[in-house]
Image (tube, rainbow, N blue to C red):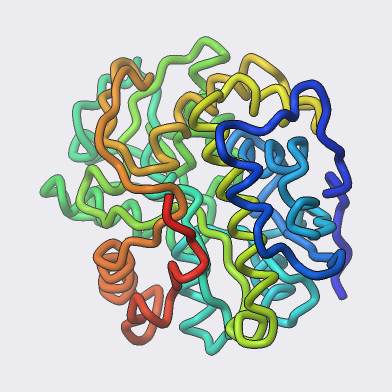
Length: 348
């Protein structure tokens, strides 16, 4: 088994900040597992604002009320999360929705059980001082990518949607140093995660212009999903149901009271910078339910609409599959039914 870095344990007891919100206790306490059950959740990355609902559920004792002793660990890479879940070395994982689709395409047994984020998190990020008005403004300029195949798919999709041939843009591989390359003036833009790298740049005094994938020709697929295997769903559906219930309760608390969840996240991860994490959480909030977002100078100023937290939307999954197929990221279409299930999401 690959080595994992332990980041937090699900044994956190409710504290002064851990009181449950309206109905959350009773909603998840009924029909809990008959005996304490150990389970492992592998994050997609280091703990950050997008995980606020998970740490809220830990602090509030929601997993324990479901008789789940949850260990939360961070991976060394996205591929590690995918491989460990598929090999049943851990019960649950978080990953970009397209990464789970890629695992399924390779013959993996993965299946998504809830969406944590309703829209893709990636896109093109540039400094506002570059005065880009659309991805078309990148013609003749240099763009940095990490080297992950999906980066080129994002870049090509946004350029073609803007009426520009990808051949008119010079592409360089910068790894995960896009922000540094941008600030050094070596690139005009880079493919990155807007609520993370984009917010970090803004918070450090560098206003940005961001072009989100789903606003520039790409699908509005779930940017982060919780997934397990079909084998676990078949053999222990109650564990899956109770994990989903506790996680959903944590994120619903976060939507009602983000400041409290921020406090729980920071309490269990004291090395996180408060100001930056709070700014990132504010950008994630509308993405948790897929609300339409109004932006000004890179900041969220309004939102409306959305779906109940956790919902895997079949049309969006189908659109993701079609986009990945066109972009040669998968070899065959993946149906929404194969990709994921909403059966464990209780109404409410």
